[in-house]
Length: 411
Image (tube, rainbow, N blue to C red; front, side, top):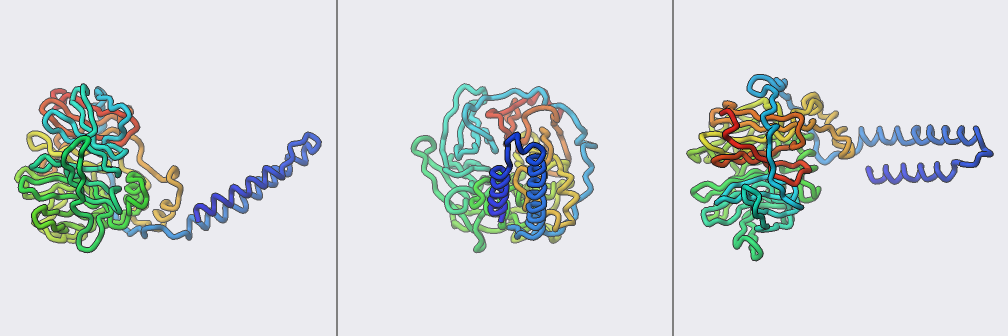
């Protein structure tokens, strides 16, 4: 329907151009013709576009939900410019380091065009360790040094990968791409426990990232719809079985292990909150109360993306965008979100740019809040803490990794 609308409008405009006379002899008559033709185009296309916005089927039927009243940038999230002094590592042609892991004096980063690269913290060396041919999002290392990657664009519909022989001879193995009979359609974040178990998020059952071909657009669609079909899963490399721990999350995103590895911390992007989940949980629904799952922190001022364990009990969370007034207003108006889902991508309501990272502890207390509303290093997805620096993951257009010295942070 959208393609037909575009074609139809092009035909009308072509007819208008061909029929409009540019000659001076026509004078005012020509101007009148143009005015009438313009009005005719509007009168014909506007009703059709209105019908399209109201009636054309949407890929997901948005459910009704009640968004909490935003407190905005108050309390521990009071506006500040503590990220204003950021420094940068240049990445050349590599774009959008969505996830970063520090290991043996290398920063490993998942890039937009399928690469996972590694670069020295001072920027002196860099190399590609693997290209999945998809779009790696989260990743971690197992006890043998193999990369464990969540890639929603790999293969038929994405999944969890294991990569050995890093470098030119990298070998990719698909570990799992389904659970409980449902395909893993949006493999997102992953963490490996010391016992070898692999925990990961499947952001949405309904939005097929591979079919859309763009993880950013796929994520925006699911968050706009608030489908609440995301899952938290466990893969056992010994039994090769995949188990469902939690369901019904609104875009299940970043994932981290507690210090004792008895719980998982999970970012629920679409509802601005973080969960703490028992690793032994079985098919717990986010809609139901269960002692194995509790909301750790709620009503954040932005959309939580990655979560990374740092030093001294800190868990770093990137708030990729501020809260969107339209999303909150339309939460209990599914019909309005359906209309928005029919709009072209450039017209979709999106949050304003803002650099924002927070650190919480396992009790959900905010320990640190770092922001910069004026800088260009926006869409921060997470942060990786080393002994002396904090490196920022992102999805902005700068081919860099931003960082600040931890000694400059007031913990």
